[in-house]
Each structure stands twice: as C-alpha cells, then as structure tokens.
Image (tube, rainbow, N blue to C red; front, top):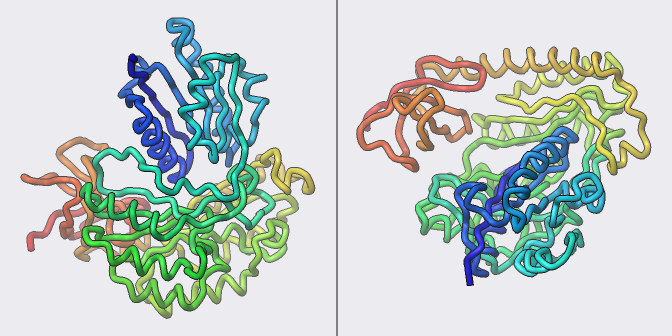
Length: 438
C-alpha cells in the first residue's frame, strides 16, 4: 500500500499549533507520512481560526489558490479543520465546493476514518462537539525545538459577548494531570527547555480535586524543563493560592498575560467579562505585591458597541495607570454567531474605531519603550531560540519576562542554550545586547 503524505497549514493561536501537532501524530500512527511541502502531499489540511473574520477570508483565499493543485492532481484531498470548520460548517462546502473535508476541533481522533471516507464521497463533514474529548493518550508529532505546547484545557465557559470560542470549541474541560505530565516529560526527553500550558481560560483549570496551582506544582517537578509558561489566564480566576504558587515556583517566570479588554465598567458589563475595573485593579495589586518585578501584558478591544469617547478615555487612563509591558490591541469586529452579533448593534463608525486604536497604540508604544529602556545596562538570562530575521550573524531569544532579545552570534551557539546578555539598546518591542561570559 502506498503511503499517503499529509501537509497541514496552521492559522491562528498557539492552541491551533498544538492541534496541528496532534493531527500529525494521529495520522503518523495510522500509517500516513508527513509532507514537507504541498507538492509532496496527497492530503492538504488548513487548520483554521474563527476569532476574526479576516482570518476566515484568508483561509478561503488560500483554499482557492490550492484549487490548481486539485486540477493537476485530481486525487488530492483538501480539508478545512479547526474553529472555522466548526463555525461555518456546511457553508464552507457551499462557498468552496472543491473542499473535501470539514472537520471540527473535536474530531481529530476520527481523522484517519474521515480521510478514508472522503475518498469515496463528495464531501465529509464532522463538526460534532464532544464535552469529554481531551485527546488523552494520543501522541503529538513534534519537531525538535526549544519551546513546546501542551493543551491542558479545551473549550470555554465564559461566553463573553464578543467571542466565538465557546461555540466552536465547546464547553470547558480539563485534561487529566497524568496526560499533561506525560506530554511534558516527552518534551523534556526531546530536549525542550520551555513548555507553555494552553487553555482558553487556563487558570480556571480543574480536574477532579485538583486546580491550576496543583498542576503547575507538578509540572515544575519535571526534570529538564527550565521554564513554564501558560496562556491565556482569566482575571477572575486568580485565587490567592494560585498567586502564592506563581510567586513560589522558580521555573514559572514572573510574566503574566492578563486580558483587560476595556477600562469602562459599562463596556465590561456589555462584554460580560465578569469583573469590574476595581476588581481588575485588585488582582493587579495582589500580583505585584506577591511578585514586585512581574511583567504584565494584556488584550484591549476599542470601539465595542456603544463605547463613548469618555469610556474610551477610561481605557487610556487605566492603561496609563497599570503600565503594561506590552499589549495586543484591536478594533472591535463583529463575529457572526457571537452573543454581541445577535443582541448589540455594531454602531461605532470604522473611522472612529481606527482613530481610537491608533491613539491606544501610540500610548502603549511609549509605555513599552519606557519599560524596555529601564532594562538598558541590565544583564538578562536569555533562552536562545533561533537566528534572527536580520540574518544568521545575529540570533534571538527570550528573557524570563518574555522580552525578545537580539544579540550577535557566537561559536557553538545552539537553540535551547541559556546565556546572559547585557542590554545596550531597545525598541518598544525588542531588546538588543551582547553576550556576557560566565
């Protein structure tokens, strides 16, 4: 029997990257090969995101480009997997009838059978959500690297009005600790130095009697793993037990992504975030008391329906107050299927959204630059990652605070090394420096 090779293109978040590794592992264990390019593949899968409409349009465009490969090779199977598949379901086949498979994020265990079925039918659709599926026992196919992903939680129970995730990934459920630890040990055995624990609201993790603090403590005991990261936590799920655990564990850097979304209590209520600015402030204060040198990043949406200029100014004010090290900033974009799309009119003009976003970016860039300038002259411990985009004579890595660092290459440099770098200059997003011996 001739081996069929699979090529997967990944769009979206780190969880999709982890899911691609999972799909490769499932197919490898069922006799499929992994193609290094589309030209070598008999099966092409687009693993997709549904958080933003632009991401979906990009996938449609890419699928259209791949149609020429199907003309040249009629036996080629083309599939769309992941959140976009779950969100749009049969609509994908209507718009792109040349797509052979539409597979949701809870169907990867069935992927080999679905591919076999696709050879004998016009199209295959499997978008059933499974409240119990955590893919326990399946082995991901990972390439050699420095940083690896382990999904500890699938789904989401928050139902923020702007977010499609609960509808495309189902209800929240935790991966058993034994499975998480198995995967972390596998990463350590492969030489990975850093692991990122993934979940939609990762710090709300629960499994039987254990919580996220218990899981972090167990992962920290795995030999070979030097740094433990996690994303994305949810503000209201920071118990004092968890904060104390973060402060205690040396392998967990003092860096935290804490999504704010808005500085207005009214907007936060419309978003159904479940907290007020006063409660968010209390969380930040408790984190900074426990870890005075903690670095914080955040997410912010501007132009949410009914947001006034005064309410947007509240966001600018709290961004100034909290002094986040970095931020992911977006103008609101209505997503079909969300609670907001059904109940709240998208009534902020696009030019107003754009203008507010630019003001926010300008403010945050100034804050980020000030934060980075404070590191000039400091010696940072850096986990070496890969050659820098500027050329092989420079490499890049990350500090414990998740700052990107660029430095000159040196003899014997390898990914995964821990080195010391003295910072001598910076931009709002990057530190630059020279290696320090010893």
